[in-house]
Image 1: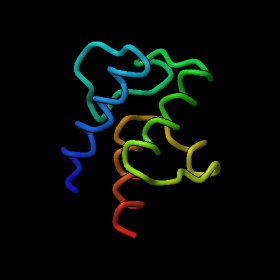
Image 2: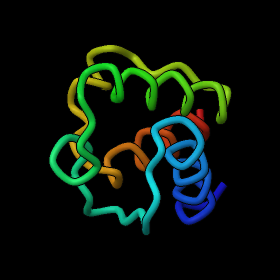
Image 3: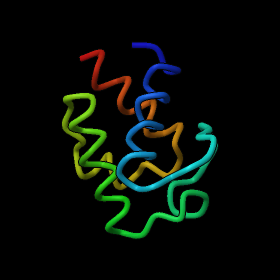
Image 4: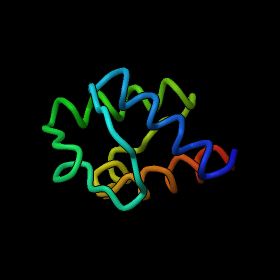
Length: 80
């Protein structure tokens, strides 16, 4: 799966589950730009796991700050 396909999948999750209505770009920060609180971040993480059928490790999840970080982590997990 390409990074653009992963980004599109994450964008779909964001629209559906955290009511994000806008362009989703790799440089966007999850907390500051998407305005996610802890519940929103958890919802996004769980729904991304469901969408891509992966498991985000809590230590790695804590280091994800941007949409691009999330795209990269999902890509690595899908490649394994």
